[in-house]
Amino acid sequence: MTGPRKIAEIASYHAHIYFDGPEQRAIAMDLRDLISERFSVSLGRVHDRLVGPHVRPMYQVSFDVPTFAGFVPWLMLNRQGLAVLIHPNTGRELSDHIAQGLWLGEILPLVNLEMLKDETVAEEARAPNTVPTLSP
Image 1 (tube, rainbow, N blue to C red):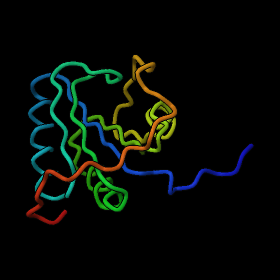
Image 2: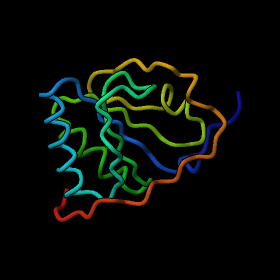
Image 3: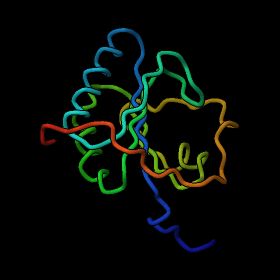
């Protein structure tokens, strides 16, 4: 066994917020608005069709390491029953998604795992595209 991995390997995080059907989509869009009002993050586009390796429509939230401590607990309390995958970006996409990920709610299968590489450059957090006006 090699030594433990260093937390410094984490360049950023992604949260994938999944929805299924019109009712959950409406909840997900309301949650998206709540996130943008409270956190300095980058909200990705809404995918109303399946984009692998995800098995449900979703959108991504990209955020930096310091934001984790406030955003993830808030999301735990406010996800409104939606399935959420939170994973680090370490440059090991495959293991980041399937071994190091944290699920809130329902654990969804991931498919087309061949599209995830395990030797890439760790993705830094995208520049925030939100301007928070409220506290968490």
